Image 1 (tube, rainbow, N blue to C red):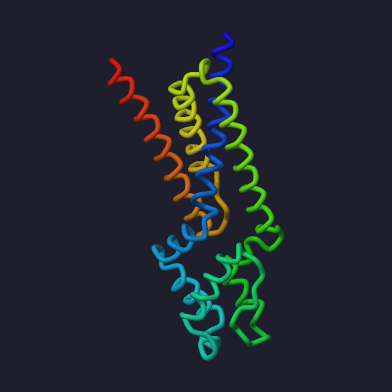
Image 2 (cartoon, rainbow, N blue to C red):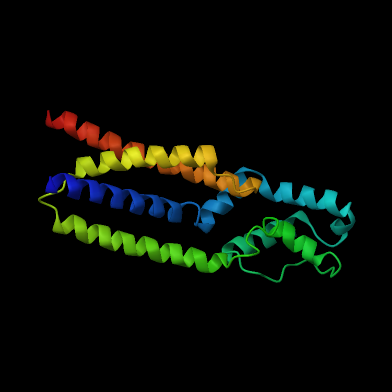
Length: 200
């Protein structure tokens, strides 16, 4: 009974650590976000949206290159308020809104939240590692991985069915993260299965 409880607890703890770690390595990674922007022609989309909104007037003082550089600057700064290149004071707030995912993070300190998530991830990794070492003769790694596999499928299903940020590009990031999350969970599960087959 004690062994089952330990395996169950470690399985859930590992699942949480795994989820947060993959999230940090994907959705919170600047390079990951910038790569998705390039793959989805995000810079051109924003430029075209601006062009329609400003009816072509802004194109006199801003270029696609400037838009790309401002968006990249915004992502690399962890979504802080930067002084962008658009000089027209009348339309400046509108320009900034486009650059900043239509002010998606306007009401939250997203930079602080990102660092708190990184801190949580570090804490979970340390705690999980310590508990794994202390119970190395009791817990079953195979059971832990299988529990993580089941939890990953449930979490993936919830994200696909119910998670909608209301922002098209943020949804792209969430979708890509969920695919990586499930893919790694499946790989870990397959390694357990292959390990069992080899033993047999």
